[in-house]
Amino acid sequence: MIRILIADDHAIVRSGLKQIIATTADIVVAGEAAQGAEVIEKLRTCHVDLLSCAGHDNARHQRR
Image (cartoon, rainbow, N blue to C red; front, top):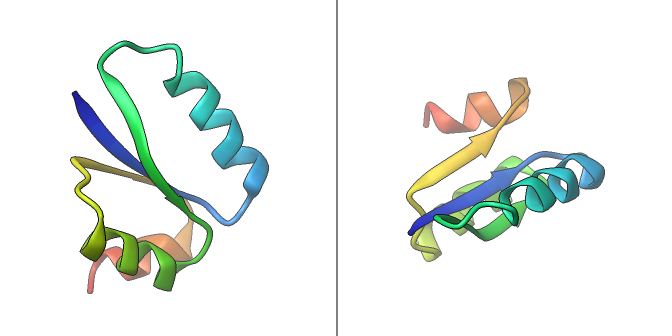
C-alpha cells in the first residue's frame, strides 16, 4: 500500500485528487496540506511514501 500526502493550496484540487486516488486499490491518502509549513509538519509526523504537490511555494519547501 502506498501512502500519499496531497499538498495544494486549492481545496478543490486536493478534493479532486482524493477522489481519483480513491478509485485505486493500492494507494491511500495519508493526509493533505494547504500550505508549505503544514506540508513540512505532516511529513515529519505522518508516515508517507509519496508527496503530491504543485506550484512554486510547495516546490520551494521541498528543497529545504
